[in-house]
Image (cartoon, rainbow, N blue to C red):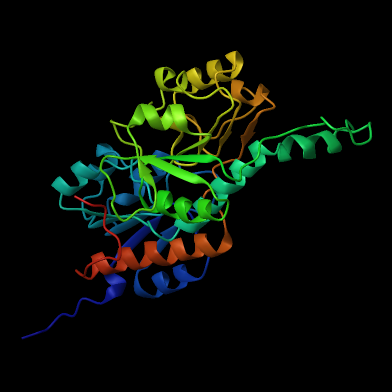
Length: 325
């Protein structure tokens, strides 16, 4: 009797981006790996042309993994996304097809929480506005008592919409600024050193309201015109979760009519965004291009987790992080 051994190299894997770090070297040793090397995301047709013959795929937030893509993956066993969010994947349909879906939470928590506090400080103390003033030659007068006055962060009320990993990391950072922390989430978390309040109270009481919820049908445009109207006129809105959680048209109106003092945004309803976005006309809005996890350390750890998740599923083992049922 002839015994045929299935070597790991029989696995075929597709990656829609070349990711930071050396973990693709390991993946290349254990699988037949094909990688899209362009700076722009691959086209859907590029993915469809290749996915039929692969056992696993590593994707990013830029890749829409819908039913068409999933159906084309006849041999597909695992979709490993290089992100904490998975709203770009039809997870329910993938599971019906027997395909496992993994992601990379935890690892980007601290980097994102750091960025959120950077955004808070930047918009409150007008740091970006001041930098621009100097670069554009606008600082022509000496010191003046009321020149570019900002808002203190120390001792203020930090409101957190959503109390997941990033929300908890923000609670820790807020203690260094002696802030009072209030939050609203789907349930109360007794172990969190913060005060649970209802949604309306969160918006009406916060000096700095941070959005840290996942994007799903219940949170899309959760930050609505109705809730924005209840905020303090000297408050700030901060978002580094998903752009679609905020109704941007309502936010533009809030800024135009002075319902709030300012906003700081790392994510937008449509990405990438640019000068055509009406939010860019406001000096009291700080914007960054989706930098929440953008540190060398975090992005390399994300690669490690995405690769380990994929290999574990191919081997029939439990991955580090599978998208929850």
